[in-house]
Length: 231
Image (cartoon, rainbow, N blue to C red):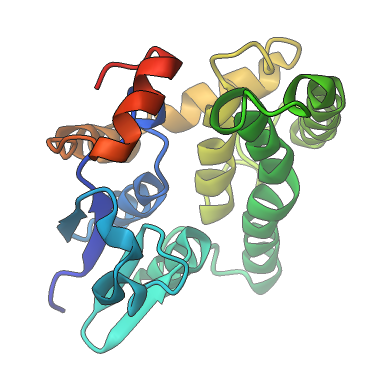
């Protein structure tokens, strides 16, 4: 098998480093022991035709393996798990539950968390942002409470077995791990700590951080200064 090629940005604002979704794909590849290459994109180039041919919405990551090109981090992680026979249990019922948790991470837990990021970062100056925050925070806390109840004292969502469902759920929870949202849920805090202590995650994070060697495009400089982020 030739090494797959993923796409990633060569620059993002400091607050986004360690959160861009190519990290999820890197982590999965590290877990299964598959080397990979990275095609780095300068900010802005993701909107141009060459990348749109890979990703119609102009996002990262993408994944290329021979004639196969995929986008959406969840779909890519599922493909990697299938391709390598890892990150998903062999028992059919347990496998289905692990896939279920992949969907839950991306479709149930992540949306209110991203609403919070939009309201506090990307559209913080919008008149609706501050009034919406209480309801956004309430939705996040509701989902975290439900997830905490379901996880209980288990190590992983599928008992003692780390799966692709855990990989994506930990990736999502990391978005709010440092802002106090997990303080009321010590089992979720410990869950995230277990996930991010895995050697595969540590390698993936180090590789992503090492790739940020570019510079912000001119149109982002004023926004960065306003946000207080180093350019």
